[in-house]
Amino acid sequence: MGPRLALTDGMTHLPALSADLVRRYDVAAPRYTSYPTAPMWTDRFGRHDYALALAHAAARDAPLSLYVHIPFCRKMCSYCGCNVIITKDGARCEPYLKALDGEAGLVAEQLGPRRRLSRVHLGGGTPTTLTEAQLVTLWRTITDRFTIERDAELAVEIDPMVTSSEQLALLRGMGFNRLSMGVQDFDPEVQHAVNRVQSIEDTRATLDYARAIGFKSVNFDLIYGLPLQTPESWRRTLLAVAEMRPDRVSLFSFAYVPELKPHQRRLPAAHLPLGMDKLTLFRAGHDTLVDAGYRAIGLDHFALPDDDLARAADDGRLWRDFQGYTVERAPDTIALGTSAIGQVGGAFVQNTRLLPAYQSAIRDGRLPIERGHWLTDDDRRRAAIITDLMCNGKVDLGADACDFALELGELRAQERDGLLVIDGGRITLSAIGRVLVRNVAAVFDAYLRRDVVSDRERPRYSRTV
Picture 1 (tube, rainbow, N blue to C red):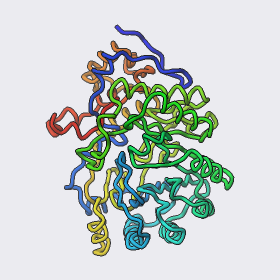
Picture 2: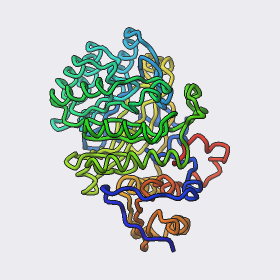
Picture 3: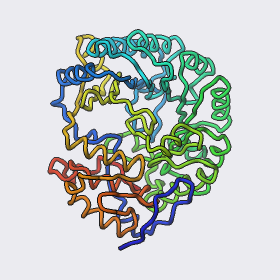
Picture 4: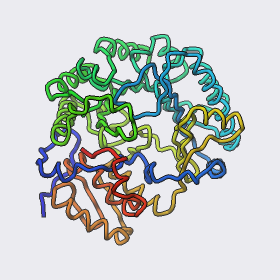
């Protein structure tokens, strides 16, 4: 049996991984922002299914979470994996805001009196592509249909290069208290390679102003594995971020999937760091941030010790969904806008990606659903296991352990490789296992075992290293 490595406490350096281990575990696998993962959902799930899911949600009595997708950006970043629409014409946003208002009305009607929100997240795209007047219009769409709880978490994603101090002040006045700021990398060569130029000075100015006007938490998004990144240039970015000291840092692995995102073909693929080179960048990110006093959270997040996320991790209350790690475990997430994904009434739902189809559905009074999935009892059991692994680095199968004998047998090989420790039905990830948690979670993915996912289809997932 391999070494029994303790679960990392988030304040230690990552151990070295051998080249052989990286080679064997660097495979395509889901990121598990949901289970079942989105490719397993079906377009046979239509608007009548969505209406039924909303009816189920309406029968509950608990606050909701709301995600609103704003797809517009001023330009296309070459690494982007989101559903975006490139425009510099603010007038193009007006019909979309009208459609959002129509969708909010359709959804609110189905929900009946259940309209309280404990979390609101504006994502994209770049929500601050909207003008101040358009942000006010959007806010009225939300507050006309829903009631925001006093202590609600209100978060918005921004790009410092298109976000004005007036927009930030407006958002803060509305009650927004969290910002997620795109940074990715400060190195000029990397920035030009990915078509996103952003200075340290502009980023710091935005952060300082946000703090001055009362935003209680600011997150920086970083991406490792971008073309032309080197350990030296990456460390300079990390040290600059650590010096600015955002409350949270999301350290995302670049998902190179040009089959799904054709614009990624513009990237200089020959200069992408892969395998051990990419892992070296993650280790540098992890170790630099923990040296600066951040707690490692889950797969790829870091938080200062007094941040809500760190406290939730300490208490085992961490949760993860399509918006990332959170302390707010809302039982239902309503999603508005093109491609937006929600989890409501026992189902995953996703709106149509195409803007004309979305607007047409709203004009016709139809919910703009594209696909979805009704959760089975087995889905829920496996989702709970995967969530515990991804959030807390451990899971206790308890009385269900006998139902997962096949999975436990497969995990023995990972135990010998030092990824985890199995003690009866208890599984505890090592520091190495936290890095390769997607590989561990995939063992519990029943859909990957079925014929519906052929070897030819697997490349739709990004690689685990």
